[in-house]
Length: 313
Image (cartoon, rainbow, N blue to C red; front, side, top):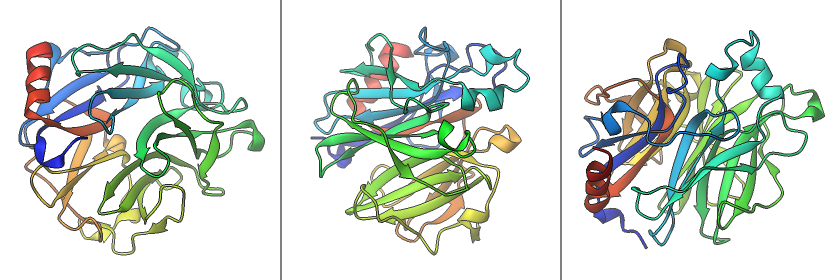
């Protein structure tokens, strides 16, 4: 079992820049010892490259097993670059895209398995976007969740679906997890603190990030009423997507990173010392060595950090 007190650095898995070439939509590893200065490993080249499905991967999410002896990395099977000749690619990839996600796994963060495609979305889905996972203590399984449009409503709305797995190979039947009615929702991420699950989701219709909380993953989520970003109600701040949030090592603070896609600016960090209230402020002290796009930050031990540095430099 992992111990938060052992975490001494951070790993950021993400894709890079824009969709201007085939390498940008692959998996990059970046690291930081203090969470403020970030450096991309492997000479600035992707660490993992998909040769399955659309041969491009976006929105990667990494999770450590509760025992701490295995890591699973999942990502959207999508290449906007490879669809560049399709003038309607951002529409067509939602109605005739991949129903699968790309999966890698590792025992040490250094050696990774071959990628595999795993179908997760319903048979009538048009896509499976931005898959993430969280370990459910109540069921002893991982809950995997993602966004899909389906033929049921002629692909009009993105909804968040979920499925359960023990090994990222076999999954339960997908079911709707978040249904916003006529509002599309994508890019959900979840963090747990003191028995409470905090859930951040992009309201695709408004291009804003919603913050909710619940004592159980199964449901019962309600809006965090005081949630704000730089003094404005959080769900009115627009232009962001791809939220990822993590606890700052050794401190009672959390960093929410939002992909400033509307300005093509990559991630922008926001800090809070009161996750329960969700009062976030810009963290101008954080710097990146490139344009990091929708990914995940995972705190790592000093040993894990050294392994990453020694392996990928």
